[in-house]
Image (cartoon, rainbow, N blue to C red; front, side, top):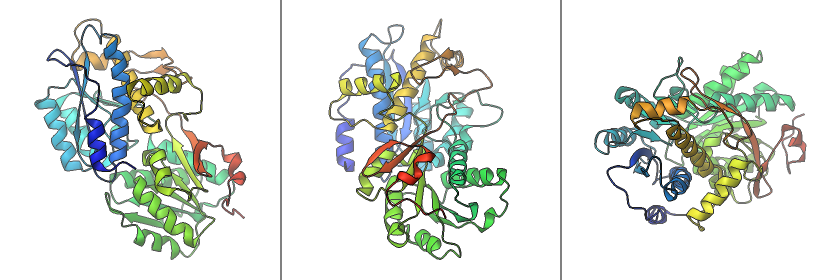
Length: 394
């Protein structure tokens, strides 16, 4: 595991391209330090690895793409300050790849106020998906509601009763969004007693999960599965502690957790962990994955491939395609027009992309993976009985 100093050292070792005032400047605010630092680091890596390809080929209309990143530590106040600095002082033409829902709650209004694109945030939160769609917010990934709906559908399909589903979430906007999404999915199946489900919470950027573990253990009905919305360090600690008391319980994490970061934290404690994903697995063989793996190797041989940087790579590719659609001057508004004009193109995901003024979400697909016997691999609900020490659903 890299410490914060190592992260910063690697961050300083990016492409030696010389930038100028004529560059296409793009901003990003994300955690580069603190308990969620790996998410920000890898999201940045994915974006930079794609832009490095474009810049080596001469950029767009003779202009290089420059990514300016500021560290917010996964704290909303710092994210809001960074957002304004990027727009007002750095004069970026767009912001992309921001990490987190609590930070999005403050950065989305700033993007709308300043009329600047916020593209491909690493969050499935509802604040990024207003209805009708905001011109200045465009998402790549499926929403948390879509991820939790997949979880509920899958759990019920293998015989787990709704009353035996529990929750472990951050006590903030991220946790609220995930919990509400799962509750809505349960109600859509006809289950109305959602207020009786156990819900353990913890404070963002801490590892204070013991009270949440106690809440689960004190439940009048022992849960068979826990839906989790937490950082990778807190998730790992929660899983290890709870598994000691309920060995057969099933853990379900959302994509935000950072699958490979969680795997490193857990070590061998990974028998019953399922993770929904908004990007395909690295072993999927899809063209976008092969393109990403090649680009990452060219960018830095020492950087590990993972699903977070793959998402950053995809977001950067969407931005590039949008730039290519701009026929005249590249401006804040023409970039949005260019991205909205991406229609019917398969960027390597195995499906066409259709965006317009009303539809600002690139995909709705959710992939399934599991942490099984020390590795992350593709997963299907029908395989649940094959997982070592799997949950007893009788």
